[in-house]
Length: 141
Image (cartoon, rainbow, N blue to C red; front, side):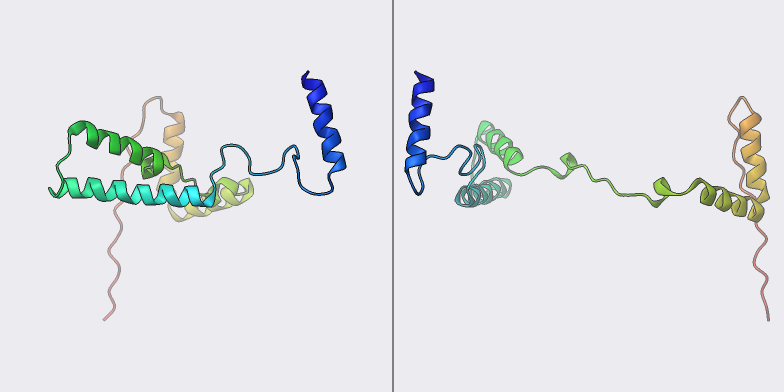
């Protein structure tokens, strides 16, 4: 029966010059129209205002009503803690030769760091990092 109906529909589509049923045409299922999004935005504003008025003591609400509005608010507007933000770090894409050159320059500038790194490599227990005291900058008169 379904095959027959599908064939009839296919024949009708071929006969019609314009419009009619077309598989895959139209807005995908579950997609909201602009007017629907505008309605949800308006409702979101109303929920926020109602909760704010309750917080300021202008409106009395039952605890269950407050909880229901909080649940709706969470569904309509994501919390910032739920958004993941990743940032590209230039060190992740650095060339190993560039890293080696930077380390060599750092160890030439601060030889005590190289000694601490080598001690960490050879030690079975973590080594406490000791800051080297710098000489005060010379003052010129």
